[in-house]
Image 1: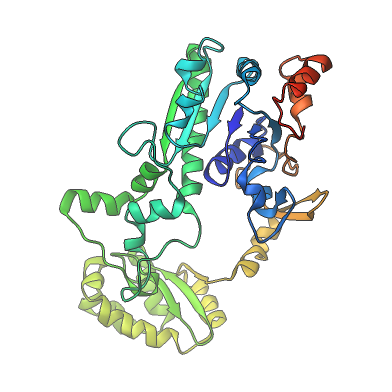
Image 2 (image 1 turned 45 degrees about the horizontal axis):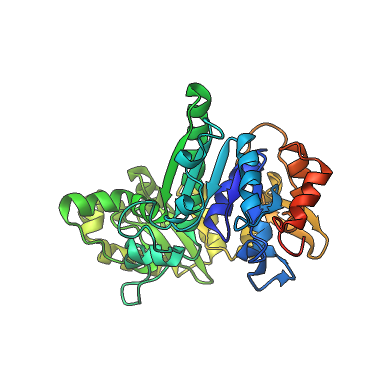
Length: 391
């Protein structure tokens, strides 16, 4: 795979494939000093950062200045020996740079050209840039998030970027499968905006079908299932979920409030939703009487789904993380030991674990091994400025 990518969404998508063992050749522009993710604070040193490490482990880096006429021939030689050309640029950029299937099929009829952009390669917004926070606002996510009396709020993580990366990976895998079956590649046109809209899921269906206007609920409550939200305890917060009737009955037992289970106001999903204010007042008062640890032990014993609201350090230190080797380490020449969350993709016994590449680190080896270039050819290209003035 040849990847013209930077920052978050694109590198996250190709990271999934790199973690599964795919050879991802990251093409970086020497004029702009490579992927902007290399310079994202707070933990950045020179041309490397912990941000960049998180998105680019197990990849290779090649410097290539596509402004140079000679660079096009190099690109086509890479395409000739690859399955995928991947980019996360503005929707109009793949065509301008010659990265679409129509522009590359003469080199490799089976090439899959995946574009992950803000708005897709067509439509009135195709020439606009798009970033995660913008998409959370534009697709309505922020109107759903936060307390009722607070401002519209983004997710704590860049979930549109991450989801767009995953969606693009699914498209790439299907495109490669089809190309190997039929001998013909294709374009994959993936949009962050459409990804965000798609993830409205059932709320989007309710709105499109019935004109539903989703309210914001306090304490991160589910829009219709009660109780299914955060509760304050005597010393912190816990999440309690009753998405089945049996869990509601178990919760009444844990609370030692059998009368709640028999109360017609709270008899089923619809009744509890209709009378949520009365019910939550009772539950808020009950949960405030004991500590989080006490409640979690009691809820676990009675079979009620529940969890603590952890900070990040506590989450990463959970015994389940340790048991399943959920943190991996690499050594970096300037950043030292880098500890990262391991891939959730567990296929087979072996998972690659290499640090992210230095900018242009693999230019010579990739052109030698993938394209069959001689040392003299590489030297001539360097003199022509194909790899940038600092290479």
